Amino acid sequence: MKHLPPLRSDCSSCAALCCMALAFDAGEDFAIDKPAGLPCPNLDAEMGCALYGRLDAEGFKGCAAYECQGAGQRVTQELFAGRDWRREPALAEPMIAAFAAMRQVHSGLELLVAAGRLELPASLAAAREDLLEAYLPEAWTEESLAAFLASDTPARLRAFLPALRDWV
Ligand code: SF4
Image (cartoon, rainbow, N blue to C red; front, side, top):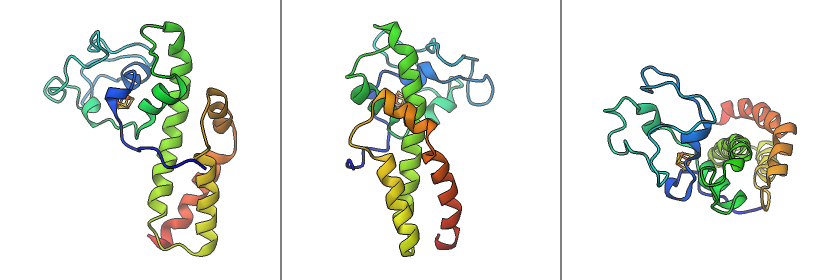
């Protein structure tokens, strides 16, 4: 089992994955519609945000509030060695798929870390350890992330969480 990765975003180490992979719906949180898989028009040449520092004022409070829980930089650095989809457009599709899976992994890790702060009985503590093992392999690959999504592990986590209610 690997050590716990950072569960907070580090946008400076990321290939702006949320700005490309995710869809925006025009409304209170986003000033524009943007389909998933296309770059945000506010993304500048250095993969930074042209509206950085004034996102709220420009109608993009959804961007300001977004937190990938560390999935973006991990996909960029660990799976794609810092490469990016803009220089290599063929990477867009695999990066989108890996980012979607890694978001699930990191969201699950955050829940399991929170569960670790509870005084759980031995059976639930053991179930948490088992899940943690599945969410923290030595390394992720594109293939193992896809296999993770197809496995029963996400469903095992969903089934585990309601059992924590009595211990919160
Ligand atoms: S995916 Fe995460 S790390 Fe990457 S730019 Fe978005 S919030 Fe930052």
